[in-house]
Image (cartoon, rainbow, N blue to C red; front, top):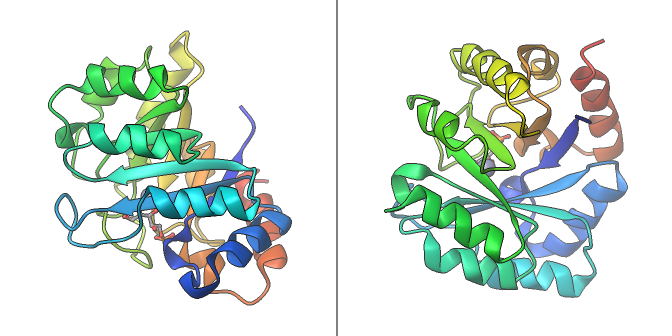
Length: 221
Ligand code: DX5
Ligand code: ZN
């Protein structure tokens, strides 16, 4: 599975969001991680499907990885699929019927991901491993960028890596929160193949330099 760098736009300059997204993609990023927060499931409020649509209208053609930190989930799935999302991940505790939500995402032509918080067991991701395209392991508590990586998640990453390697379904293992040039190789060594970084990219002056440093780290040479 090739390794993916997915900048989280939560830390981007929202006054120039289109340019910011284009800059990180031109600088070598692979996906755009689009954090949706509803001030209900998490204590913060961010952006909706209109902004995803605007990025598509702006000319962004790259993979948009939508992370729904919302409750309930299902109504927003259709809106984001219509707005141009490529992948939609959600938190299982935020929906009444996990398999129904997965089916809804896939019926609308998007890839489906399950997001697990640091204190949650991976069991629910395990249960649906054959039905999903990505497991998102949160390495911070959801709601804000710029937090510190929670080291205890490393064990979960390795556990999940083993499970995925034994499964017949090639599922991506995404880690989200507190990743930076100093710890990305440890996260990669633990078994992640998809890396979400917000502040570690958008808080730097030279996105190309930052992303090439991260690309060396993710190969964990
Ligand atoms: C947090 C979001 C993360 C966050 C990552 O709830 O899901 O995607 O924006 O930001 P950093 O990399 O700054 O921790
Ligand atoms: Zn996220």
